Amino acid sequence: MGRPPVTCRSGITPHTASTVVPMSRTADRCPGVFSAHPAADGHLARIRLPGGLITPAQLQALVVVADEFGDGHMELTSRGNLQLRGIADVAGAGDLIVDADLIPTPSHERVRNLQLSALSGRRGGLLDGRPVLDRLDVALRGDNLLAALPARFLFGVDDGRGDVLAEAPDVGVVAVDSGHFDLVVAGSPTGRQVTTDRAAVTMLDVAHAFLTDRADEWRVQDLDASPTITGLLEGLPRTRPHTPPAPPSEPLVGWLAQDDDLISLGSVVPYGRLSARIAEFLAAIERDIYLTPRKEILVCDLTDGMADTVVRVLAPMGLIFDATSPWTRVSACSGLPGCDKSHADVRGDLEQYLAIGDQSVGSREHWVGCERGCGSPHAAHIRVQATPVGYERRAF
Figure 1: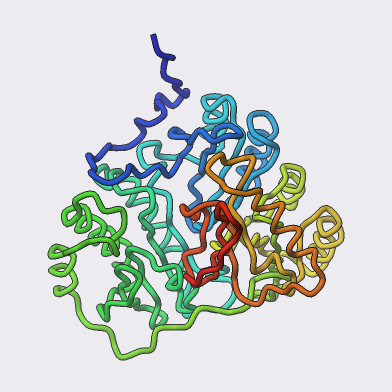
Figure 2 (figure 1 turned 90 degrees about the horizontal axis):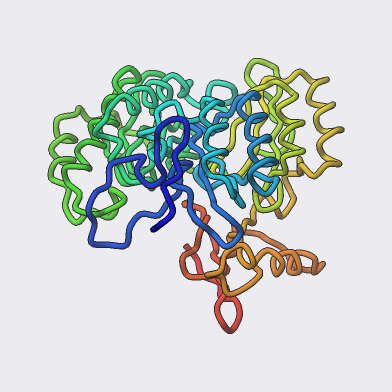
């Protein structure tokens, strides 16, 4: 007899949390919490964080999960979510994650990629994108049919600064003024206008159209034809002429002044790998934290004195507040020994590379152990890929 299925208190059994769509291509193996992926170092679970937001209470709950069930760390992903590695007891970890209200709708836990412009409503941008993102998330989780979306599908709300647009969302919006968006499909503005109050429902309409048009594709960009999406776009008014924004080039790291005279602190950690101890100190600040696709950690709404204290305490512990650090521009997959598909100890090799004094990282780089390229940024970057005979560099 085989092993009985593991079931969490939520009633969800791993690998049955969402609708299964027959596919001819390789199955979408993006892990969730109830569909944790078995890796060489234990199970890997990925946690849905709409807009990259995690509250102090939720972060503290994940500290307990990481310490009691995982490897003592949590990892930032290139979609602005979090993942835990080395999990031996998937059901036990899942129960604590559910209790922390990190899976409000279990059927949709793998439909998790909802990105929002970093610091929207606090610093820069043409409008505050947070209400649009909130409406999108609530309506998405209330739509049973959209639980069938692939785990790689990306929604995005760009407040006009271009950071989310650079991530090529399957469907999204980019602000053109304080009350209107240009609808984005397959990573490009369509020239079709939606108002702020219609943005969320229009994005969900496009997602439904994608499900109608797809066979086994994971992304809108992969479709050979999209007649339903095209018909939907033709029914929308055209936007006024505008130039799509270029993405910001500087990392959100260091002391970041908000529009309300408070401070956000931006930081990074090597490999986007946050220890439970540092996370516990971050939770103790009792301020909302946003994680970005560039694996930046943003602690918001601080006074000058609070920000100064945070830097003094957490910089010696390993948080990097220096925008010139190479860790703001370089990332890596887990490599050996955590992944048995890797050709190399990628992180060990990267550390040796950075330790050489005359080496510099001018462009964004991602180091990987095989051709799968796990964790690769979705914006332009250089991939440094291990092969059986060494590393090769390639622009993406």
